[in-house]
Length: 288
Length: 236
Image (cartoon, rainbow over all chains, first blue to last red; front, side):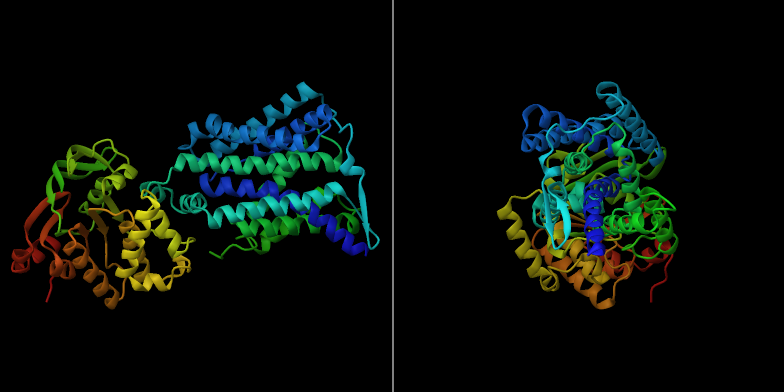
C-alpha cells in the first residue's frame, strides 16, 4: 500500500507539472520562446487566489480571480515583452523572460513580504480521505480533477473546434495558416491565455497543497517545466504530459529511497539528465 | 485577370525578378518556366504576398494588390499551392481542408469541400488520416485541394510534379485542365518542361530574373529551339 500511496502522491505532483508544462510547450511550439516568466503567472495566480480566499472565504471566487489575473498577465507579457523582440534570436526572449521573472519575484517580495503567506482557512488541506489505508487530502484530489478537466478541455478544443484546428495549423506552418486567413496574432494571444489560465489555477492549487504562497514558489516548478518540455520532445504535447507524470512519480519514489543522498529537486534534475543522455530527442520525440 | 506590369520582386537588396510584364487570363493555364534560380518561385510568392514587390504593379481583376496581406489576396480569389506542398503534417486531411476554407462561410466551405473531394476522390478516402502520412502525390492533391477550398479564381501552383510518381503527375495535370475548363486562371511553375508544355495555353520563360521568351501554347510546342536555348535541357 505504501508504494501505491507513493505512486498517487507522485501523480498528484505530475498533474501540477503537467498544468505548467503544457503552457510552456505551447508557447515554445508556436514562438520558439522558452517562457520562463510563466513562473510569475503561476505565482501571481497563487497570490491573487490566496488574497481573495482570505478576504471572501470563498475558494471558488479565489480560483476565478486567479484565473482572471493570470489570464491577463500572460498575454500582457507577450504584448509588452516578447512581441517587440520576436525577430531577434531566441536567447533574447529567454533573457527578457528571466528578467520578468526576477522583477516580478522581487515585486511580490516587496508587496507581500519575503516569508510567504498562508491560507486563513484551508479546508481542502484539512479535509482528508482514507482509502484502503492511504490518506489523501482534498487539495490532492482537486489537483488531479483540475488537471484532467482542464487538459481534456484543451484536447477537445484542439481536436474538435475550428479555432483549435487553426491554432494547430499555425503551430505547424504560420505562413501558410496566415495566408489562408487564420489570424496569427489572435492565435498567439489565445496561446498565452490558455497557458496562463492553466498556470494560474496550478498556482492556487500548489499554494493550497503547501498551505504557503511565497515569492519564489514559481522558480523551481518553472525550471522543472522547461526540463519536462525538453524531455517530452519540444513542442510535443502528449510527450509533455507523459514526462510530467513520470517526473512526479520518479520524484515521489526517489524522495523516499534516496532521501539520505539528495532532495527531491536534485532527484528530479538527475532523472532529467539521465533520460536526456539516453534519449536526447525526448521520450516521445522522433529520432533525428 | 492577373496582370503584372514592369514588375520587380526580391528579398531586401537582392532583386530576383525585374521588368516582368505578364498577363494570366481566366480559363487558361499559363506555364512559367526557366532554369533554377530564374525567379519563378519568387514571382509566384510575390503574387501571393509573401515576397516584396519592389517595382511595378500587380493587379488582380480590379484590385491593385500593393500593400495587401496574403490573407487579403486569398479573400480576393488568389490561392497558392506552394513549393514543397507545405500541407500541415500533423493535421488530418479534413482539417487541412478546413484551414484552406478558413476565409469562407460554413456553407461555402462545405460546397468547396464537396467539389474538392469530387476532383480528388482519393482525399475523400483519407479524410481522417494525418497529412504527413500521405504519399507525395496525395500531399500534392491535398495542397491543391486546400487552395481550392478558398474558392479562388486564380490558382498559383509551384512545382506540381516534383518528386511525384508518373501516374500521380498525370492525374494532377488532368485536374489542372479540368479546373481551367471551369474558368479558373492557373499560373503554373514547373520544372518538368515537357509536361508543362503539353498542357499550357501560354508559356513564359524566365532566365536570370528576366523574361526571355513568351508564346502561346501551340507555338511553344512547335518551337524546338525554345527548350534548348532557354532551359538548357535537350528533350527527345
